[in-house]
Every structure is written in C-alpha cells, then in structure tokens.
Image 1 (cartoon, helix red, strand yellow):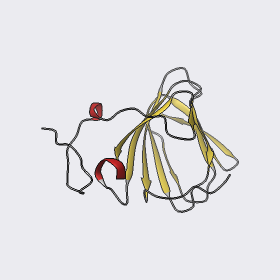
Image 2 (cartoon, one colour):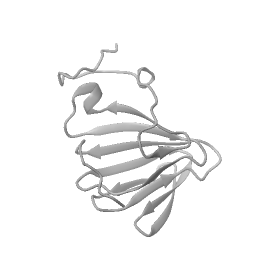
Image 3 (cartoon, one colour):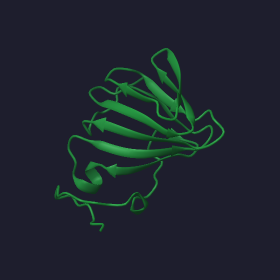
Image 4 (cartoon, one colour):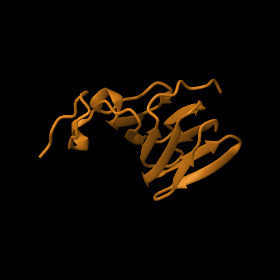
Length: 130
C-alpha cells in the first residue's frame, strides 16, 4: 500500500519510482537525485533523505555547509570524494560522514552509474562560499 506524502507532516509510505529524478543546483553532467524525504514532499524539518545516481563524469561542485551534517552511502559504482584537500575513492558499501565546515565534492570517475544514499540534517543550511 502506498500513501502520498503531504506537507501536513503525517507518516507516509511511498515507492521510490513515484519520486521524479532532479538535477539540483550545483550538480552537473547527469548527477540526478530523488528527494525521498524532504520539506517539499512531506514537511520534514530535520532530515533530507535522497538517492542519487551519477552517470560517468557527473559531479556535484565543491561546496561547504555551515550547519548541515551529511552521510553518503555508496550502493553501486565508484566515485572520487574530496574532503578539503583529501581525495578518497568511494566504492560499494563505503560511507562517509561529512561534518559542517568541510569543503567537499563527489564525482563519478568510474565506468558505470554511481548510486548512493544521502542523508542531510538539518534540512536548511545556506551554503557558505568555497
């Protein structure tokens, strides 16, 4: 059974296929995400939960969050994650915690789509300039 999420902050059950793919600002080359739990679709205040699929060479531009914390969890493929000056190859089942103030980006440098979950808290930040 699937029920539609709403702005009224009610519990809901949904299916990933019901959510459209989007290329959010700062994402390029086929870096697509589905906002599964977000203020726009359910009124969440503390959690933004997405699944992302980046085609080879797709990426999110380097950026910094002022207060948001993020977790990236790779489900398929591989990508190059930057954390300030550090570069880390992320593969299936790798995950990372990115605290506020860490400059980061993520690029699919593999041959197949990079699929990963992103959990962000809180939902609002106002990114600081790089």
